[in-house]
Image (tube, rainbow, N blue to C red; front, side, top):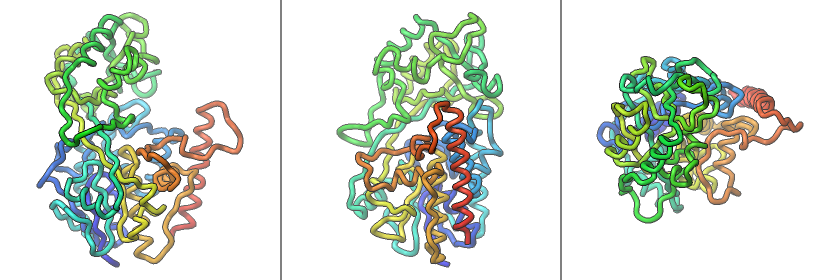
Length: 438
């Protein structure tokens, strides 16, 4: 069979390359690291997690959990690694990010059907079939070639990552262990409470702190709601973050016996608990300002910052107008898109699109029909959304039950409704995949 080019060794690219290689397809995987890194990338490893180490909810009765279960049934290498390097995170699946990426990197590097080329791709290859999975930080030269090839404007927004602090620098006299509503293990999260006066002082400092300049673009900047910088959210009102990432519901401070006024939650970055991520605190503040402002939270007064938050460019194509249901270009069936560049939002959504793109490349090379999952499945619903030509003012979309068609019978109880949606989705997923397999 023909050689397949996969551009980008992120989550989507690794899933695509591995799926095809496992089925005997020769893959050339292009990766610009370590020759060049984007502002958000720090590691030379493949499948780097540049933002949070959480892969969202684990339970199948959630949108994120249903997507992950579908991926497992498609042989996801990312979930194989995630299960090996999971760290406690309540009801979420979170991973030790270096172990997670190292495992995938070695799997890819050692595969006999994958040739890795460490180079910057400046133009879409014209030989064979290509999967473009360069992510939201696509290098400028290739981004420009894609723009010219598609004849369509890119849509751009900015994305942000949260800081990470050293576990032993957290003042546990001013913090406590508890998962919200006591879900998961008791030590999954460290909670940093603030009383009303502390919160108001913190909020005032946060909204007036100096932000880092955004040099990637000139003109207006659109910030994606799913990864909103904490200082921008805080500027929407005094209680905006107290009803958002700092909401205290489901938590009780053992020092007072009462629910705090506001809470910052810290989530483990690794199994040892030596590093913690500031949950929901994506930021574009200058590094010195991050240290000053976030140290106003009592439990972080002496915090050692292992990584400061950063804000970086995210790019995605106008996929509803450009992509077919199999994730190939309408104007060129030899070019497929996957990952966040295709308009999906989130780690697992990106990885899942990489698997599906690879499945449909395999079908294309084999002269078979593509795998089009029904919209009752989570992956099928996501792909349907990003390829629906009727979509106007397109924005990236992650897994959520709002994408699925409703049940025939209205169920008021949300937990029951989600359970039935997941059950229906998996049944239809199994039926469709079984009928498609050849």
